[in-house]
Length: 362
Image (cartoon, one colour):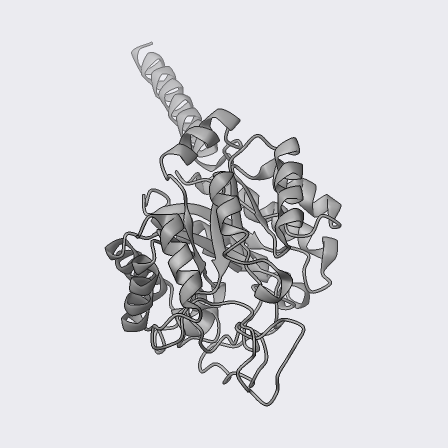
């Protein structure tokens, strides 16, 4: 009888222990829910007015050149973020790339941490971007191509691009990448937000991007970072993608390169379907009448985070317009993006003066 009681006690203990393991495992891997509107608005209040640029150092042509060990350039990052700080910017939106992580996981994370240290030195928060459907479909590790004269973003690369459709097993790598980065930086208070996917459906992908869009939200929610998650609305004609982005983002983000009337319409439309804070993560294209003089004051008035494309002119060639290549490489009469020359002098002093006025730097 004594042995029987001991046996039954051991069985009960084993079943209880296994139940706890199963329950705890399900808790740790279950994707978290989207933030409530109340939580999103409370979170937004702590940041004040976010303003900055989509940033890549002038010495990098793309995300790989920015993050790979041999071409990571902290000296230039430090210098150029200092220029941003000098005009009152307090945040930058920065693209990552899974291939830089895949070839050197621990080194990549150390470089991300180093970037955050430099940004913090300049009183800058950071908004990181994981995936991207824009520009070149293919990419390779190692030395990156030289810029093509006068061609906007001639070397920028998608992530994961066509490679995902050619090799569906890449999904496993992408999942490991997203979860590793989030596990490492999920409680870093210097990170504003995780922008999970830039312009899904661009490059004529359309709804081919929807499966990855859904997966990256699931992976990120499973990692349960303290920072919010979002994917920016950029093309309202991609209705299924757009609806999913708005419905699943903790904070509503968007891109707009239109004039003030068009931009205001976007703001009004987004606010009619979302009561969450708004952050504009791309704007300012001079030839399209999206200017610091007419859009930045609007965003400040509406209390919308404002990230223009481009801080310093460099290897990305984004001072040239998307649709107006200048293959002779001559200086464009009107810069499309960017604020500073590579030597730190402003492209237009009047613009810098206005930015400083809006940010309280003067």
